[in-house]
Image 1 (cartoon, rainbow, N blue to C red):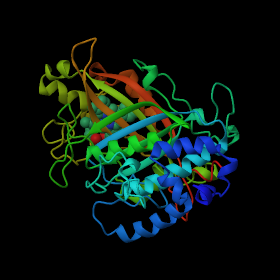
Image 2: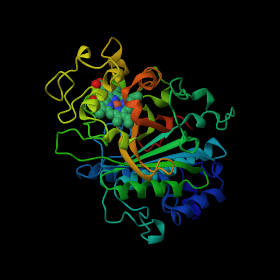
Image 3: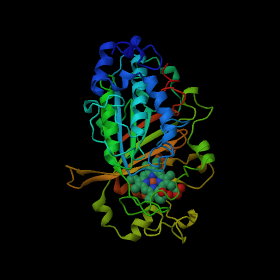
Image 4: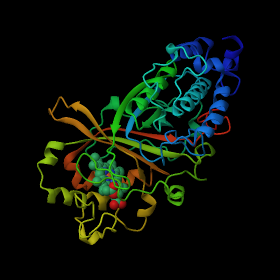
Length: 419
Ligand code: HEM
């Protein structure tokens, strides 16, 4: 690799960072140095230029920008989510990993296999060849363990941890599985083709070998109803009716994007909370439609709030059961507007639960917000106490991540944090 090796890493100091041996391991995992061989900066610059030309292509979502894609991007049909433990020994190793991931993400989201200039099939697993970008987005996040792990400040980041990146408190009725909870870094891969999303997560996992280990992952899917109509969840209800409007910049600025209250590196970023929520479908299906509607506070067929006619009519709390889902999730009282989060969840179906013999299926809840301390946590605290829906749900996995802003101008992901 010679000189090219020396050019790897946007800071030009990669030889001080990941050891040569480890970089070679990572490059080898990528299949012979695709990303490293041509230099991360070259890839970033080439990709940014190519991507701006490709923006016209309907199925490519630009990777570069002020905010990361995959947050306000209209939801794609499939999700592969990965949560990683960091095994990097130094902050420089971590920075190099993020450089490699940035370059790879630019390629993958443009629909290019990770062979780039050397088209040898060994460089890419090949399972997404010919599938196009499929609106792939890759959204990266940093968990609390990156800033402090078992009391150890591994990467000298403790001082840079935003106050809003708290550990989530235990909630009533949590049934979290430790092996599916937490994580130091995450990647949310969403695409209209599940194989494109899976391929991206697979490649990023391979590229990260030696610096990160995949801790847990989750697949997800969404229905694609007629344009303009709200998708239904596995309980048969329209889900997303009173979500924040991702194309409303004012709402995003007030409720989703971090502003001056956060440290410099996270501004224009956000916080992601994920919860894997199993649904007791047998129990639900045995209920009457009236009982199901009381549980949510909405009509099953139309999605209208109880006591109203149409889906988007405002709900009147006086006409709703006090412990129904929508009134606990949004009491419509003073301060409720500030609490609202951008929900971007996916249904999942993971075979059979060995304990109950029932389908292990449900909702992989993904929520984006400006401050989980005044958004997700108070909402979930109320839901966990009293939501009528609790009879049918079990929270089995959970994690929180700080989502840095988007990358632009030849920078890498999280460069403002880890530099
Ligand atoms: C399996 C679990 C869940 C299911 C099946 C579910 C389903 C629904 C449905 C059908 C609605 C009504 C339509 C809509 O406005 O989108 C809704 C509303 C909502 N849900 Fe959930 N949800 C679940 C868990 C959660 C969790 C964990 C949170 C947050 C902590 C949450 C927060 C909200 C919010 C904020 C609303 C909007 C309330 C409003 O403003 O009217 N949900 N959910």
